Image 1 (cartoon, rainbow, N blue to C red):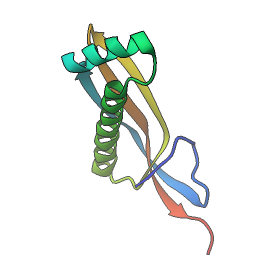
Image 2 (cartoon, rainbow, N blue to C red; image 1 turned 60 degrees about the horizontal axis):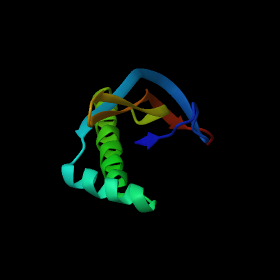
Image 3 (cartoon, helix red, strand yellow; image 1 turned 30 degrees about the vertical axis):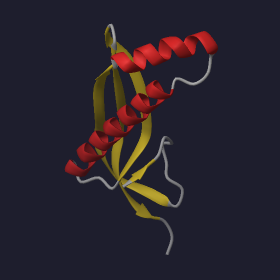
Length: 108
């Protein structure tokens, strides 16, 4: 599956648009991560626990989007975007979406 954040794929031609596909996940903060983050705020630097949480969330949302595209029979997703939102205090949603398409290679 080709996944891009552009509306075209170099060397390929879109022959069919399958529709919008999406994937999301809602994750809550972990008390241990909150404590470590609070301490890190005193000295500065990366909040590695939250970086890991965001990376895991993004991968889960992308996997769900890919599954959705496969169910539609697509072989690519174009115009991929990510968004986040706060659901409740301590919980956030990461949402991935794009347009599922069928592409064929251009040229001979």
